[in-house]
Length: 182
Image (cartoon, rainbow, N blue to C red; front, side):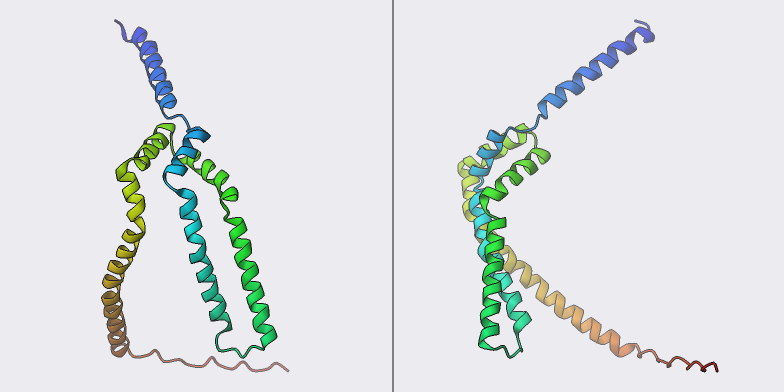
């Protein structure tokens, strides 16, 4: 077959292949995503984050007010602001508010096939086991990372001290005073 006649057929075949690939990578339905969110325990994981965020806020408020001699009235005001902040965060991160966001992000990120496969995994014994053990995994990882970071930080501090001993401080000369014009 001559090349000029072959080209349109190749082009048609390429278009069909592209259309088939696009159809296979169709966006997931809301129902598919809902299944995945339920299987992956997304709501309970979001709810588990809230106390951690509140604790971080409490620590920030503590830092802001530490060393300050606050009156009882000022302390009550700080507590009121902290409670209001917690209330705002809980409302903003409530599942009813976040669920549509999750659905949109999952639609933008994953195909229907991806979402179904992930839901199937999380519904399996291995997926459930992963979800059950993730908190312990994260705790163990944080402990292992800390063990690795502490010696590294000590080494960096030692290196910094040694480098500041070797390098003399630069001399600072005051800027020359400008003469006033009369």
